[in-house]
Amino acid sequence: MRIDPDPKYDFDDVLIRPKRSEAPSRSAIILEREHRFLNSGTTWRGVPIVASNMDTVGSLTMAQALAPGMLTCLHKYYPAERLVEFFQNDPAAASVFYTLGLSDDEFDRMVAVHRQVPLRLICVDAANGYTKYFVDRVKRIRQAVGQATIMAGNVATPEMVQELLISGAADIVKIGIGSGSVCTTRLKAAVGYPQLSAIIECADAAHGLRGHVCADGGCRMAGDVVKAFAAGADFVMLGSMLAGHDECEGEWVEENGQRVGMKFYGMSSRVALDKYAGGRKDYRACEGKEVVVPSKGPVSETLQDITGGIRSACAYVGAASLKDLSKCTTFVLCNRTHNTVYGA
Ligand code: 5GP
Image 1 (tube, rainbow, N blue to C red):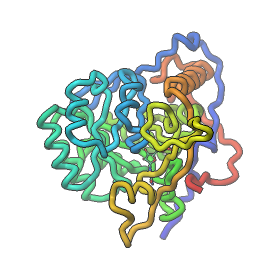
Image 2 (cartoon, helix red, strand yellow; image 1 turned 45 degrees about the vertical axis):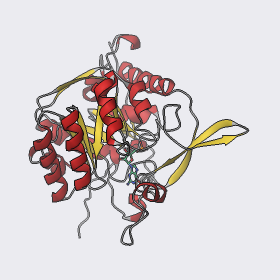
Image 3 (cartoon, rainbow, N blue to C red; image 1 turned 180 degrees about the vertical axis):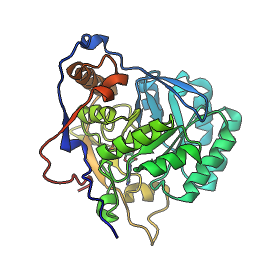
C-alpha cells in the first residue's frame, strides 16, 4: 500500500481567476472546435458537448435536438433495426455515436449494423476501462470498423489513456471513475479520482500523443462544464444536466396531471440492472442509484445556459475561443474542506 501525497481536485475545489482581457464581445467568441483524430484519420467540427449514453438521456430525440452542432451517444437498448433505420435516414446521424459494451453479443450486433450502414462514430462504454480485456476489445472494434471515430472509456489516469490511444487505437478516451451524479462507485468500492485532476492529468497525457479526452461525469451546472473545458477536456459528456428534458426517454413523475420530474438512475443501479440485465448478479454490488430530477422543458434552454457560461468564462480570461480557454485559465483553490463524494 502507498499513499499518493499530491492533492487532487474536484470541480468544487477551484474557481477560475479573471484576467485583463482583450477578448471580443461574448457573441463573437467561437465555441466550435475542430478535432482531427489520428487513429481514424477523421475530422469533427462542432461544439464539443456530448449527451451521455444513459438510457434516459441518450435518446434518438435528444440526438436530433443536439445535432448538428453537438454530439449524442445513443444508449445501447434500441433494437438493431431501429438503429439501422436511424443511421440510414436521419441527417443527425453524423453527430451520433453508436454505443456498445464489452459482450460478444454487443460486438456481433455492432458488426451487423455496421454492415448495413457504415458507422461513423462509436462509443465503447465500460464501467471499468482498466482491464486488458477492455483494451483488446477496443482494438478488435477498431479492426472491425476501420475508419470510424472511436471513443472508449472510462478511465481516470494517464497511463491508461496512453494505453487506449496506442494499443487500443481509440481516438477519444472517456475520463471519469466514480464522478457521475448517480454513481455510487466511490461509496461501494471506494474507487475513484477527483474529476478536475483526472481531466488535467489525462488531457495532458492524451495531447502529448495528439489524442483527445472526453470528461464524463460530475457536471452539475454550467460552471462545472466550463471548469472541465478549462482543465483541458476536448469534449464534455453530460448525464444529469440533460436529464428531465422533453427530449429524454424517461418515466415522468406527475402531480395534478403536470410533469414535475423524471426518474433518473445510474446504468449500474438496481433499476437499470432489473430492466436490462435480469437483475443484479450475486457477486456484484449496484454501483448506481435512482433520483428524481426536476422536469426542465426543452433541452435548448439548458444548452444555451451552458454555452452562455462558456462564453462568459472566455470573456473573463481573455480567450477568443473555447480552444484558447484552457491556455488562458489559472485555477484558484478555494474552500477546500473535503473531497466531494458524488453519490452520497
Ligand atoms: P453525470 O453527468 O450525471 O454526473 O454523470 C454521467 C455519467 O455517469 C455517465 O456518462 C456514466 O459515465 C456515469 N454513470 C452512469 N450510470 C452509472 C452508474 O450506475 N454507476 C457508475 N459508477 N457510473 C455511472
